[in-house]
Amino acid sequence: QKEVEQDPGPLSVPEGAIVSLNCTYSNSAFQYFMWYRQYSRKGPELLMYTYSSGNKEDGRFTAQVDKSSKYISLFIRDSQPSDSATYLCAMRTNAGGTSYGKLTFGQGTILTVHP
Amino acid sequence: DTEVTQTPKHLVMGMTNKKSLKCEQHMGHRAMYWYKQKAKKPPELMFVYSYEKLSINESVPSRFSPECPNSSLLNLHLHALQPEDSALYLCASSRWVDQPQHFGDGTRLSIL
Image (cartoon, rainbow over all chains, first blue to last red):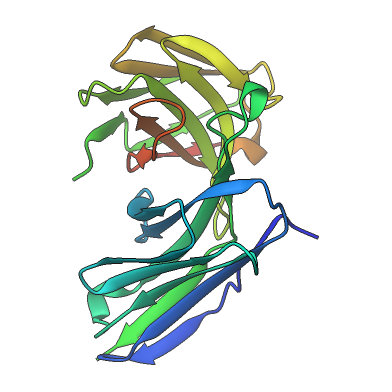
């Protein structure tokens, strides 16, 4: 079993829809959670960075963390064709030593928003 | 455009060549990273530098040799690569190793 599970999709939605992207994880030591967006032929772009359980909002994006269920989500409201990309969840522990700074990624979900 | 700049954007090399990838950031970040990403896969960590010192080497073959000459620059020296090393090589940086990482757009490497 992978430490982080993310449905690769692909996910196709109409413009204006609310998109829900999710990751589950098994390592309870994960404390910090990120969502990255990666366009084709580009590097991952940091969208959201969260630590505590609960919601964090930034414009049309809301990140949700439920540590008790080991489940994180990213919601995109009023989705646009420009949101079409691969979305990667990533997480890390608070451990030091050889794990320090190491991110564990999900497989990525391919999202297409069609006009 | 990202604040982490990688050059070249594309590189084609033979298995006997020696080449280098370059990464630069001017955000004052003291942690820098190399990742390898294959198509439709997430990035895989290769190396982590913290304050210009190598802190993590994820058992990467010796044909990949990282170098951090100063706090703004990170190089990846390549020698005698194999066709399976063809991938997108991403550089990232963060203020410190426990801070969010910011990626460059990568170098797309093809080994003939």
